[in-house]
Amino acid sequence: MVELPIHRLMIHPLQLVGICPPLGQLCLVSQHITFRYTIKSIAPTFGPSTDYLVRVYPFLSFDPSAPNTALPAGTPLLSWLSPNPYLLGDDSSVSLNVNLDVNVKGTWLKAHIINEDAFPHTISVLITLQELEVD
Image (cartoon, rainbow, N blue to C red):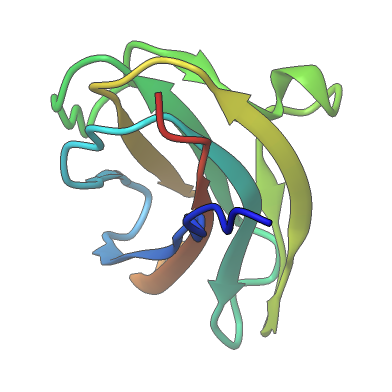
């Protein structure tokens, strides 16, 4: 019997964190992702007193730009899953299992945040990736 080498598919937790100004916008951008992957989950954490006034729009993009006045170029990740392209919450973490394959190399993931509150809010978005099979 011949033993084949085992290739473990790496799990990559990607943490995006920032402070969104009052009545403002903020775009958080990952590092360049140079492998094909599955987005396993998207989990933003909303601080106390956000009162559902802070929206997180996850995006897949082919450029590292981070506009703070409009939604970024790219594909809204929730467009396949929901009529609303954003997640929101109050004093909680929201975890959404996505299992979306990204079969191209050279992408960035973004979390565009819109704060409709009169106070700044810190938002953390954990995106869990799993590498796809090696070519």
